[in-house]
Image (cartoon, rainbow, N blue to C red):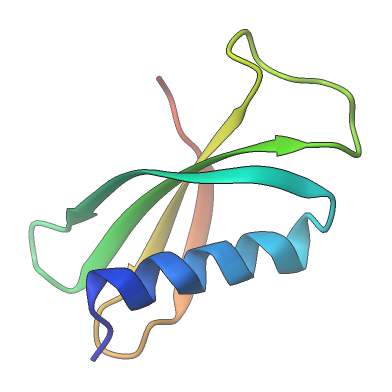
Amino acid sequence: MADVGQAAQMAELYLRSLVPNVSNIMLEEVELSDDEQFWLITLSYNDLSTGIQNMFGKTVKLFKVRKDNGEVISMKIRKV
């Protein structure tokens, strides 16, 4: 069973595996899904590979992590 700290670590590892040139990763939000099966983890970061940043200088992503085993099952653009 993945606690919220483990879920956040899994989300960060997943992000780093897909976007290797990230820096300044920040944990922004955590939430347990309504059915209590998933952690919803919001991370912000700078992507140094693109040179494109949003108006706050960071990209924000929402990760859906299984609570039972810590598997990341989705990564989406977080609408702010």
